[in-house]
Length: 272
Image (cartoon, rainbow, N blue to C red):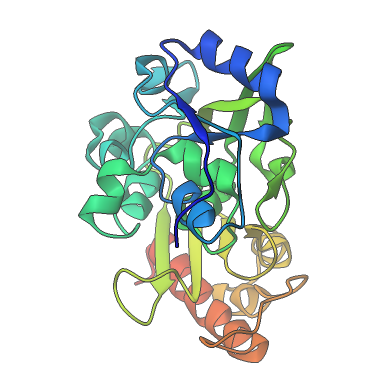
């Protein structure tokens, strides 16, 4: 299908982009990599009056150590996450997960901020960021504010971001040699995950087990209390509401998440 008519602009600076958002609000949509927005516009689930292209703003593309965190600009491409030496040393889970996103073309265009802001519960990177205890930095006409990623998501494609705000940065605590793993179950290699599990130490992020990316809190609590990995993994689905679709029933996903959590925890804790 063909999108409805819209105006297009490519601001030169971040401040210009925020000013346009403040002016247009919900009548505008932000374009970064385009992998989420363009398909939505093609099927006319979204029909913005103005598309604001921030994909080439150099202010939003960087990866650098900043104190106890690694700061990643929201415009950083997935491929840049994959090949980053800083992330490989400081947050190795993140490039490993980014490597599983789509195919080379998707990784060359898609952005970290875009996938965080889109809030698809089947996306890989938000669950990894949950396991890493990341923070989302938003900027609007009232300035910047930081939101723990666990408080950022409200539902399917819904976040606490205001219409006049942009996701400008993701901050991830440096974890160095902390054990990590990512287990992803797909029908084909480039597909969305039917279920996936990201582990960093004793923190566990879940993909496609509810209306948002989730933490497996009951399993995490069991680990902290000293439960064996198998017992903790059996609790991974507690408090979740896995969807039912052509790829699996809630019962199937519940079984999968238990198996994948056990595998990921065994890898992260050096037992595989």
